[in-house]
Length: 132
Image (cartoon, rainbow, N blue to C red):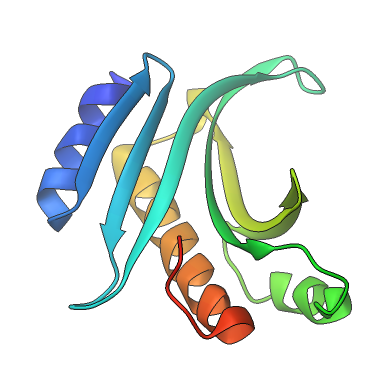
């Protein structure tokens, strides 16, 4: 699978925007509805713990501050299918990854949309705004 080509085609399919960062990293702007959009970064990377290559998608939710109920986020993780909350570089994010050897295009589309929708939903719940 050509990752950049797949991401570009998917962006066109959903009326989103695509920007290639490099051959292993792309940025998608996903339309959530008529007025809301969510940025999702897709990246091919080696997961050293498994010694396997994976595709990872992530989207910022909001800055990680002390007033965020982390227990609530952990409990909400159980409601996601592919995605999970994480804290990276001072931000709450929604992320999902899958080994490249087992992926299909349909599954990638499903994962991307879950990451975008959950990040947008929680961004609004936690901030009341559409920032990322």
